[in-house]
Amino acid sequence: MNHTSKESLANSSQYSAYSDSYFDKLYNDNTDPWQYQTRWYEERKRNTCLALLPQPHYERAIELGCGNGVLSELLAHRCQDLISIDGNHQAVKLAKERLAALPHAKVIQGIVPDKLFSLKELLEQRKLTPAVKSV
Image 1 (tube, one colour):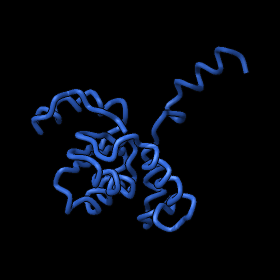
Image 2 (cartoon, one colour):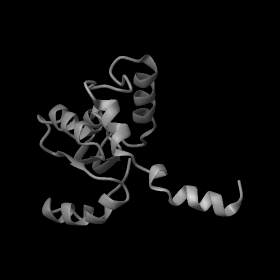
Image 3 (tube, helix red, strand yellow):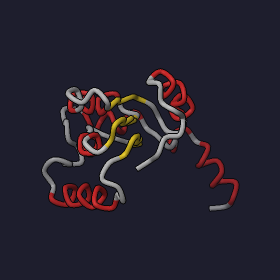
Image 4 (cartoon, helix red, strand yellow):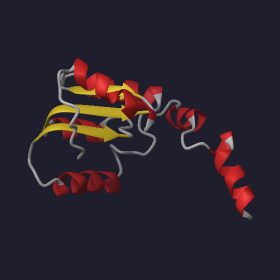
C-alpha cells in the first residue's frame, strides 16, 4: 500500500477511531459483552490494575472507556471523586446503574478526546480544580 492509500484509509469514515454501530451491536441484549463479571482473566486484570496503584486512596480520578462500570465501582471505593467516561449510551446507562449508590462517582457519555475538552466545565460544576489525576 502506498503512502497516499494509507492516508485515504486513515481519513475514511469507515475507519474512524470510534464506531457507534460496533459498540451498539456489542451491547445489544448484552450487559457484559467482554464478560468482565464472569471471566477469570478480567477479574485478574482488574485486581492487577488496582494493585499497581501506588496509593490506597485518591482525591480525584478519571476512567476513560469505563464500559459497564465494573472497574469504576472498584475505583470509586478508592476515590473521593470519580469521573467515568464511555462513548456508548448503553454502557453509560449500565455504569450509571452500577454506581447509583456512589454519589461521588459521575458517569458521562463522550468520545475521547472530544469529551475531555468539556471536562473542565464538569469539574467547575462539581467545584473541583482542573488538575485531575488519572489512575
